[in-house]
Image 1 (cartoon, helix red, strand yellow):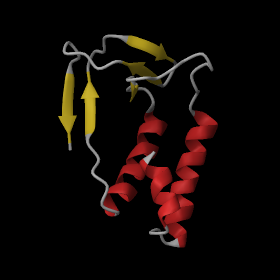
Image 2 (cartoon, rainbow, N blue to C red; image 1 turned 135 degrees about the vertical axis):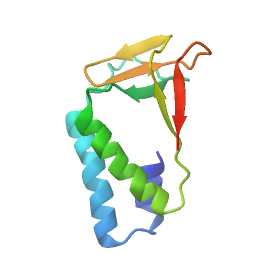
Image 3 (cartoon, rainbow, N blue to C red; image 1 turned 60 degrees about the vertical axis):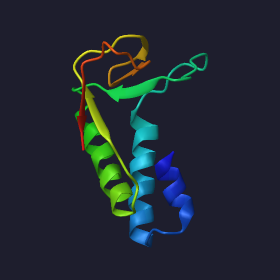
Length: 105
């Protein structure tokens, strides 16, 4: 959501706007979407460790967002409870006190 807000803000140079748009387009093309019946509610999406290209692209997006004053907090997790959806690259889960979460800034 922050990336789309930044695109609409008018604060990006032409090359930055194009770069963010390319990253978002890449995700739309390559990242599976949950089935229509899936409702995220409070779910948080996590990339699996094997989603190397997705992780590379999200870091590109994080750098642009941070350069424009957005606060981005990165979390890693060794295990997730309350899994609602998963595919080859990502997992959607409700946050849980039992998650093995680590915050990385």
